[in-house]
Length: 303
Length: 267
Image 1 (spheres, rainbow over the protein chains, first blue to last red):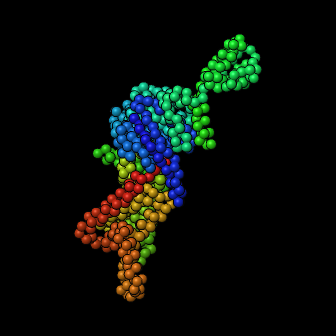
Image 2 (cartoon, rainbow over the protein chains, first blue to last red; image 1 turned 90 degrees about the vertical axis):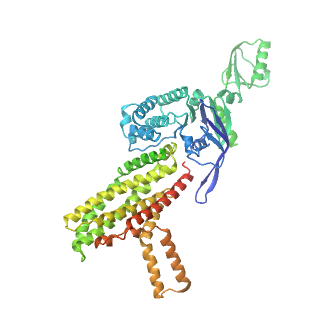
Image 3 (cartoon, helix red, strand yellow; image 1 turned 180 degrees about the vertical axis):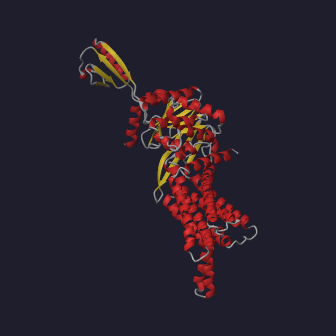
C-alpha cells in the first residue's frame, strides 16, 4: 500500500535558504491490511515523512508509491484518509457542517453523505449533541475525534494518522484504539505515528523506528525486540557469593535474585545451581520494550 | 468535472468564511456612509451636485473593493496556512489549482455582493437627490467589478507566496501603478516634447514608463466616471474588450499563483 525507497528531504530555511537535511534514505514497505506504527523522538522526521506521503511536502529524491500512485499525483489521495497532528479546522463551522464540507469534497451527497457521516461519527463516538456546536468550542479530544471521522468519510483503503492519540484522556485513547482496530478489520491499511509506545506495542503489526531522519529499526514487534538485549532473572532459595558464580551473572536489586546477561549465561548459572544443590524458585525471561529499544537507538545516534 | 465541483465547494466555503469576517462589515458600512457623505460633498462643491455624487460614489466602490481584496482576500490564504486547515483540505483529492481558483471565485463573490449592495445604495441616493440615474452607471459599476476581479487576483497571487504585510504593499503598489501608468506615460511624452529632458536620460525615462505601462494591468481603463458624469456613450465594444483584457490578466495571475502554490511545502 505504501512503498518508499531512498527518500531524501531537505528543508531550506531563513533568508539565506540554509539547508537542513531532515530525511535520509528512508525505506518503508507497508503491505495492504496492516496496522503500521511509526515511532521516533520529537523532530526525528515522522511528521515530515507523513506529509511527504500525503503530498503536502515535496521531496528531493526517492521513489514513493501511495496506493499505486506517486504522492505528487492528485489521484494518490483518492484512496487516502489523513488526520494531521492536532487537527485544525474552520472554527466557524459546526462539527456536522465540517463533516458535510469534507464529504462533498470526497464526492458524497444526499442520503449517502448523511449515512456516511453517521457511520464515521458513530465509529469515533462523536455522534453526540456537541457535534452541532461550533468547532471553536471543542476540546482537544472532541477535535481529535472529528479529525479521525473526517479522514474516514470517504471509506479510504489507506488511513494515515499523525499522532492520533496525543493529548487524549485514557477513555479517548481507548475509543480511538478500538476505532483503528475496527477499521483495520474492515480491510483498511493504517499507517500512524505515535509517542505512546504502549499503544503502538498493543495494536501494530509492524513498526518502523526513525531517529534523526533515518530508519534505524523496522519489523514486527518480536523482530525488533529479539534483536536487542535479552535478560533472564533467576530467583534462588539460598544466598550465593558472586565470586563463586560463572561469568555473565550480576546481582539484582532484589535479594537472592541474579541477572543473567544472555541465554548462555543463564545456562551456565543453572548448571552451577544444579551442581551446588541450590534450589531455583523462578526464572523470568525479560524482553525489552519498544521504549528500551528506542532509548538505546537515540543514545546511539547522539553518541 | 470533479475539479469544477471542488472549485464550487471551496468557493462557497470561502464566501461563507468571508461574510463572517467583521472587517468586511466595517468596510461595507464605511463605504455606505461615504456614499451618503457624497450628497454633502455635492452640496458644498462648486460643480454640479449629480456629477460629484456619481464620480465620488464610483471612486468609493473602487477603493472599498480594494480594501476588501486586501483585508479579507490576502488573509484568506494566509489563514489557511497559519491555522493549518490547508493540511486536511489538500490531503483530499483536490488539486492546488482548484484550491486557488475556488478561493478566488469565493472572494470575487464577496466583492460582487458588496458592489451590488453599494449599487442599490448608489441608485437610492441618486433618486433621492433627483440626480438622473442613467444606464451608463451600470456600465461603470460593471467595469469597477472587472477592475476588482483583477485586484483580487493580484492579492491572491501575492498572498500565495508572501507575508500579509508585504502582500498588502504589493497589491497597493499594483493598484496605484495600474491607475497611474497611463498618466505616467503621457507625462513622459509631454516632458520629451517640451525638451525638458534630453539624451540618455530621456530614453531611459521613456523605457521605464513603457515597461510599467506594459507590465502592470491598466486599471485606468476601468474608470469611466467622466463618461458617466456627462452621460456620454462608451466607444463600441469597449465593455467587451475590457472584459477580455481583465480575463487575460486574471488568467495569468491565477496561473502564477497556482504554479507557486504547487511548489510550496506545508509544514
